[in-house]
Amino acid sequence: MNLKLYRLKFRSSFHSGDREGFLESTVPMLHSDTIFSAFCHSYWLLYGDTQLSELLDSFIENRPVFLLSSAFPWIKEKVYFPVPLNQFTGDKKLKKISFVEKKAFEQLLAGKTLQDISIYDRISEGKPWVIQSTPRIALNRLTNSPGENYFHFGEVFFNSEDSGLFFIVRFPDESFIKNFQSTLNLMADEGIGGDRTVGKGFFNVQCSDIELVTPKNTNSIITVSLVHPKDNEIPNIKDGYYEIIERKGYIFSYAGRNLRRKSVRMISEASVFSSNLTGDMVDLTPEIFKQHRVYRYGFCLSLPCKLREENED
Image (tube, rainbow, N blue to C red):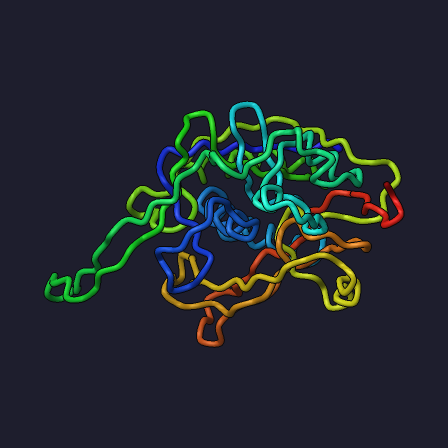
């Protein structure tokens, strides 16, 4: 399976919050909806209102020009994918594995278990990142007094120059690749995640092709992005292996950045289902916000896989 792979090599720390109101909390990855939101802002800066509206319409009308994954770790020449959620083991060491190298991931797609592929690289201990909690204060705008506004701010630092995050993209419309890469170059200087105004989240980006070996006879899919299923797809997830995460946050727009958008529950990465999911864009516009509609990206980028049958040795 041929896809485009984009490596992000961070020039600074970044903050990717997983709980609203807990600034000390951060995760060492970027969800697909966060990447899409940052992309749209840079696309607007580069091409303007009209072309951004046309881009969003293509997604709203279920004809997306690209599908992207969440961002996972890379180290040197190796890229690491999340362990599928249908993997169960009683081995405490194997339970700690959060990401496995591409070759091991392909074995899991083919129906193998963590025990089968334990000889391959995986990320459990010795992670290439460090999460640091930095003490901060919030000054009163009128008096410049910190008062009791003392808090900690979580930041992710990659501890090697040969490491970072990557995401993959499928282009149903290959004519959009040039615009995508131009926008991503601007996005690298705009930053991603929290606290961009003070230099967080800047990165360099490299593009390459990636081919994932997937099994010929498949009976399931694994998600590599967050997913907001369509209403008619909800019955298809009942027998799957998945987790639900709640996505919240504030509007990031030229028209206003201090309003909280509506929250939504989404299916996490590495979820496994026996039926395909498409996903959609979900409208989270607050009632008070009238300048434009606010959407969260919920399209599914999935890979075919094979569930290990219970009667297999």
